[in-house]
Amino acid sequence: MDMRFRPVAGLAALLAIAALVGCHAQGAPADPGGGSKRDALWRIVGEQCGPDQAQHGSPAPCLVVYPDGGAVLKDKHGATEMLLIPTTKITGIESPALLAPGAPNYFQDAWAAQSFVDHLAGQTIPREDLGLAINSEDGRSQDQLHIHVDCVMPDVKQTLTAHLAEVGDKWAPFAEALEGHRYEAMRVAGADLAANNPFRLLADGDPAAKTDMGVETIVVVGETFPSGPGFVLLADRADPASGDMGSGETLLDHDCQVLKPPA
Image 1 (cartoon, rainbow, N blue to C red):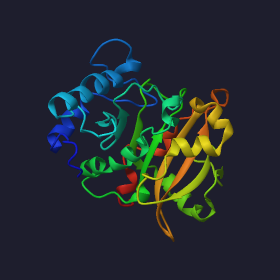
Image 2: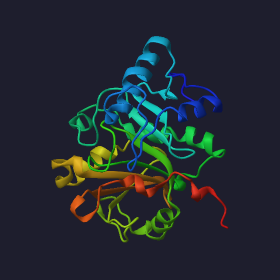
Image 3: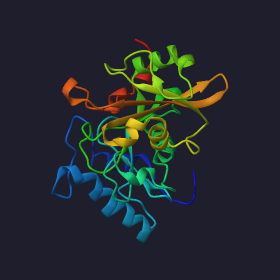
């Protein structure tokens, strides 16, 4: 583990933090600081984790604060779900700061948070079983950017595997609906996301998305291609009138059924 930061240590600490906060597309988060529930994550990360790391060298109540300002927090929902949250005020996917020159690649930090998911799962999760998701403005319950890190739904994994060879290096419609919604998909190579920022790839590859990033949801799933490790990137545009809230988080499984042996 990178020694530029000092995470909270031990499973007991993880479980204690899990009881403190949470965020879910379909549920209201805990709000220990009072005030608007939509600002609960910001009060925890911006007013506690960031300052605690800067002043005391400890990220509590977060698990870690990375050098570029991304903090990892245990979500209260599910056994293993983590959230990657900036310690600066960024409301969500619509923020121009995410596309600014030199902007941190928060998806890379989210992928690095796999070690914490592994810890709670009690095993090293195969990359094909792990996903990252950020919801649209309409599909989120918090006004502080946060990327969900957890297992993928078993049927999503199965569908991606079946059509993996069809996913190219440019955005194109994916062959099948995923959890009832149609996504655009593209592939990128690499063991991690250091060289590929999904926010930038979507904005640069889809002029409509760049014009209105707030309606977009992005999901990233680890994959292994014949040429080596990489990722499938998925994007969907919210359309509340048709019942699509742009909640890519629904492709993740907070019960991690994909890790359990078949019945």
